[in-house]
Amino acid sequence: MTEALSREPIAIVGAGPAGAALAWLLASRGVPVVLIERQSDFEREFRGEVMMPSGLEALDQMGLLGGLAEIPHRVPTLFEVHLRRRLAFRVEVTPESYKDGRPVTTVSQPHLLEYIVARCSEHPCFRFVRGGSVDGLLHEDARCAGVVVRTVAGNETIRAALVVGADGRASVVRRRSGLVSRNRGAPMDVAWVKLPWPKAWGEEGRVEAYLGNGHLAIAVPAPDGRLQLAWVILKGTFGDVRARGIEAWVEAMADHVSPELGVHLREHLEQLSSPFLLKPATDHVVRWSCPGVLLIGDAAHTMSPVGGQGLNLALRDAVAAANHLVPAWQESAEGAALDLATTKVGAVRSPEIDRIQLLASMPPRLLLRKGRLAEIARSFLARYATTSFARARAEAPVNLFLYGTTELHLEV
Image (cartoon, rainbow, N blue to C red; front, side, top):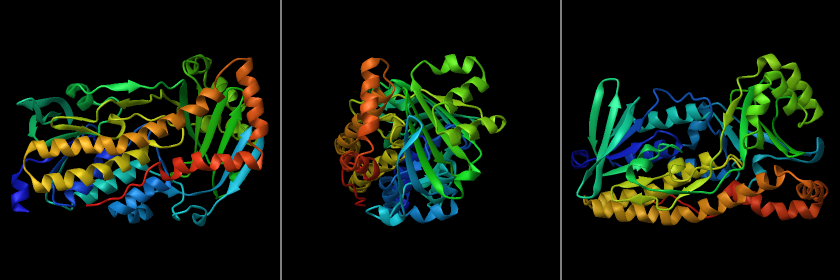
């Protein structure tokens, strides 16, 4: 351990799911880590909170799944799809309904991140810089050699064997390293709001989706016991609705959900949290790495909220990164060994990211498109979706969202 601590650490910028999970995997295996987080806490206006079996599997392999018992979470047991405000089908589920026994779960991401960081802190080779903003990258001999961090105490230069950018869609590390991404487009805006849980729904967790008339709304049980509602609309149209006031915004949304939920929305108008507008982006870096730098999570691939994949793919990125970085760091102190490992991470993760992004792009393009042909297509979908044949055909893409498109196992 003394020899390990004498070597330059791996600096991870961003303590979101990808960065915190990778920090844990490295530190728990004796690799010195400095985790740098711009915010002073993890409470943010919006965070993805849906964990699929694929994400839970990653947590389990990391040895962190047991911590969920102490973290606010809810497990949906009922899924309903409404087409044109009418129930199309419903599915009741139990943990045994999933092939691995791990059910879809909504998890408080701030609590999850605090838990992971606390576990990291058990290791002397881990350091956490909370409230530190990366202002720039250090370069020596055409390779990144560390970061310059600004904190309330002043600037600090942190030398590093490798800099991992896990700092989200507006990644400073990506921008400063010159790594570029391909924008795959997202023809939608998403308005998020929380309100009290409908008493008529009982204590069971349930997820409801409402499709029709060029709108898509998804209601999920929030970990804090409230209802979280996402209203997916054509990009650029939210401003017009919001300009007419919150009452008009709620009325427009209530007209596109079930009558029961519409009444609940109107009755709890005063208890709605402030609507938060997410402007989705879907992109993917051309290269995940360059000498001295690796990108993971949203810094490497911003995901559409459709399918609830962001949190899960971030955790899977961390597993893949650890599989290659840990042995490279243990076998050699040379930067070239780590750089070779980073190229392997991108090669392993890109196929799954590409496929999930393609699948997630399809529903909005059909459901939100305007025009006569789009309306005819939605009418056909409304009739087709209720058939047993359609449900059988839907099983394959649904399983890709649930379990991932590739097998991924922690090997270190």
